[in-house]
Every structure is written in structure tokens, then in C-alpha cells.
Image (tube, rainbow, N blue to C red; front, side):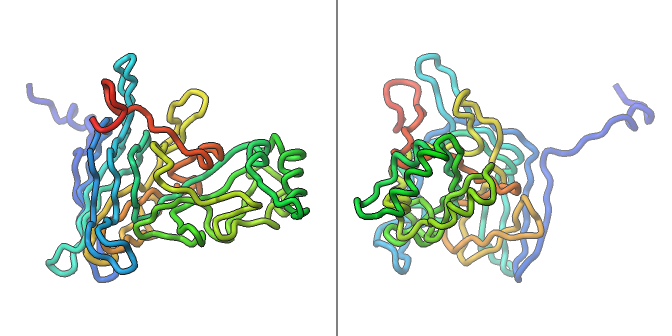
Length: 318
């Protein structure tokens, strides 16, 4: 049935696909935007990208190496699937002249569990670690003669026992605590990183500012942890009580490039994210400063068990 002009004038819409072009730093970009909401639960036996000889890195390793990679989770008892949710995915290609120098797959928003036996990651992975002072104090180990350390432990576990502490973490070297964006095997607090009490007073944070992570340790406690400790990472904000994701991570992408490429930041389009040559994973901080991954101090110290990603007997490798 044909619509009249009057009826047509009341209809608005947008194609679920559109192409945009861009240029920066001598490169041109073409991006295919997909206006879709995607729910997925997938398993990959071996995710390996960028396996080649790289200066300073062990032979036979890859830029990104994750065995039993999975997105989403399942409940084997009920058969229910909790998908990994993606909003507004896109595919972008970078050119130098007529030569393709980079490809990235990105998501406007992403939330859900990312699981795997993580061997190495190249990229930018932002993590917020949070928890009560009482738990943090229980992890502080002081030599008997270190009165400053004992004093700090008493304050954290006493006056600040019920305070919410926070720390920022990223891919690091161990030992050293230096930022490590290439084939990293550890995640933790970089050298010089301090604890904070987000809701605390200026004086509270001044006191905490007297102590900082140094060479992967803070007040006798390790602050750098093997990626292999973490069977699953919550991407986005996971409510620890309901175990439901209440917010998504923004600006997530996975890319491969033959040279360093500055991809436009999809959160702040006036900014750029430099992806190093090879394979690169970007799980950045959101525009409000929160990290793509949020985990507790207990999980940071003790690791995160893998969520079930396989219906049936195995929890992984299906």
C-alpha cells in the first residue's frame, strides 16, 4: 500500500549501516558503523594475534595470546546464557596512500565477562581496584623494625577500616612496576602510583599520598600480579551483590597495524589512541575517569576464578 506524502513526512529513520571517512597524521580512514545491539556468548580455543619476532620479547610469543578465550557466561545448572553485550560496533580501515596499514574492530559500548588463560597482552588495559581498609590492612606485611609501615597498617585497619580505598592499575613489568604495553604478562600499580580514598577528605588523601607503589610493592605488599591469575575480567561495571552489569565500558577496540597508528578516540573525538604496530587491545578509561575493568582488592591479590563459559561438564575449552 502506497503512503501519502503526509504520512511519509511523519516517518523518520536511519540506516543501520553508514560509512564515514577521516584523515589524520598522513593517514586516511574509512569506518563502517553498524547501528546494532549485539548479544553474544562465544568460545575460542586459542586467540593468538601478532606471532612474529619482536625486539626485546621472547621468541615464539605473540602480541596477544589467550587460550580458551570467551565472551559472556553460562549457567550450566539452568541452561541460561548471560551474553556479552555490544552496542554500536564498527569496522575501520587505515590507509597510507592506497596501502592498508591498519584495521580495527571497535565497540561503542561493551559489557560482560571476558575470560581466558591470558598469556600476553599488547595494548592499553585500564583497571580500577577497590575495597575496604580492613581487607587492605590484612594484606600489609611489615618487617618488625619498620615502624612507619606498622603505623600505616594500624591507621588503614583502624581509623580507615570501613573506608573505601581505590587504586589504578594497568599492564606493567614485574619486577619494576614500569608501564608495559608490549606483550605484558602482569597487571598492577605502576611505580609511583598511590592509593586514594575517593570519598575521603584532602587530609585523608594527603596521608595516603606519603606512600606509593615502588618496584611492585607498597608497604610490604605486592602490587603487580600475573595475568594468569585472572580467569575472567568483568568489562564494564559489575554489581558485586546482584552480579549484574550496571554500566558498560566505552571505547573498547581490537586492532592490527603494520605501523604505529593513531586511531580516533570514539569517546572524545578530538583525541587519539596510539596503537603500536602489531596487534593491540584497547580497554581504556571511560570519559568520566572510570576504568573499563573494575575489581576488588581481594580479587587483585587472590585472582579471579573463571566464570563458566561452556554448557556441559567443562567450564572452558568447549
